[in-house]
Length: 357
Image (cartoon, rainbow, N blue to C red):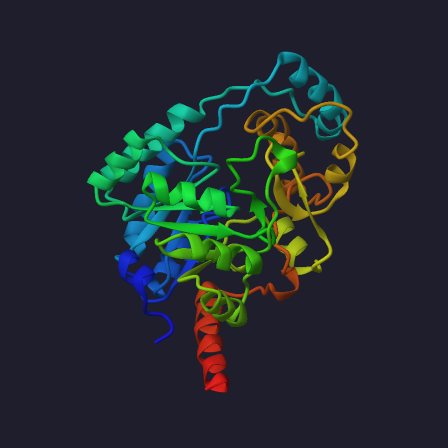
């Protein structure tokens, strides 16, 4: 019974397979289907208002009675200057002109949005809450624990994993450098010193130092990846890119095709789209902004400045100017339904164990 362990018991799920909370790309159908198959589906609520989150929770609830999670971004306290914003706007002007877009107004409401989301999680008795970009305050952790919410943190180094356990996370995702989308680093002094340790190296080192369950993430796309993670000492896996190309995923068609037509050498880690380091498929926008002659405004400022450019480009089918988050194993991505992907993952692990025995 490879799938039964303390993590599956804590989460009340059958299989230790967690669908990553990919902000902007999850749908109630995706989340509910993963949970109905025995994994843990997660609502990617990083950019949601409280009302939007409430709607999504209710939709997921209407489709499954199984446990699911909500993934939230911990607010960042980054300083920026008006000069930084002006300089970036000047650089982005040609893109906005080409797409006939207005210059956006920077509006930072992260803190309030995060607190409202926590209230929604408690109000609707969501069983699991996952955090990335850092750790919530002790007050919020206590509140969630009182409401019997299982807490999942994210770490990109042993040091960050230890910090997760210290503050009271119930389990932690060890996010390897292969992972697609945003890096969950939070202890690095700046973007340039953020850890990029591979999954295979990170997981066993984290396991050695922690007593809470570890979830492996980064480049895991099939049964081999799942079994390898369990052998390394993880009690579960978190998969993003594998679910991103499914029919039920909310990812734009440009992103899905981008992943399906990419190879392992096509991704890069960049902060030009959002102000935070994230792994995605390299394109013209990333190449061009890599030559930027100033300091990239921090997240969420840069995210707001490039938002309409990325969304409009994606809507027009322009893959050159939008973000296409992807892990380092795009060759293993398939266009299929979630049930098919999930069934394959389970049967692949079963088959591999047969060959070993």
